[in-house]
Length: 322
Image (cartoon, rainbow, N blue to C red):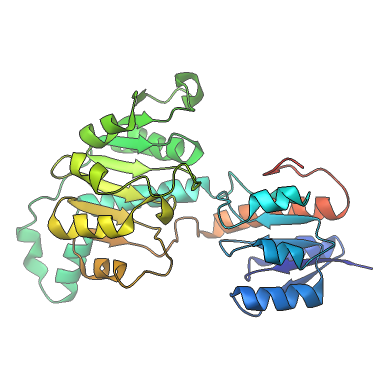
């Protein structure tokens, strides 16, 4: 009898090839809602579940009595009920480095687009105003500017390296869990508290995991600390931010501008849709990790580890201890 894998969303064919070559049958969910997942999981009874950003809930786990593992095609684990999976002794695996460069490159793109007021220029040019180029005050070069990092983990360090070595920026950071020795030789000046980042950086970029201690820890209070023309960047998780306060800060000029790839909720709430018409915001629909290379990397890592779990072998990238 073959092992079975269930995708909550259609992923790369690379993962399917890995499963099939290891005698693991594959089923792709027919919808993206929990009701569909529960019905199909009960019918299919997979040995492993593979997801991207779709939720894997306690009810979904309970629907699969023979479940051996859950795989995340990526690094963030907030869409998986990790505590419940651990309590049921179900191994969760992930791909912590597979998309790190893609996300870091996307952060560089948002930084540059906000510095050069891309949303405004693009809208004006498309409407026929070629001579928008003659009046671009508040458009800045990033060389010599200060990038502030809130969180100095894997993605933040790659991002910092690109900004230091490629763009000539100064980088400061705050992360109570990272030491100077863990920065890999990068000249990042570590600060004693987050307020120093908010107050002194020209660009503030957040790189934190979403968990109870970090959820909604950024809002109007922090935006009011920023320099008059400082830019806020977020390629991490929308849930880190009081989004209504951020929208208000952008509308009123408290926050000069922002480059955002993530939101809470996703898709955008009615209130957050106001940002679609703001010329001081660059928005992308949670696509930072979506490159051909990163998808292949993450799917390869994740599918390989799920195959290992099917056959009783230890995974290379476990996300929990069971």
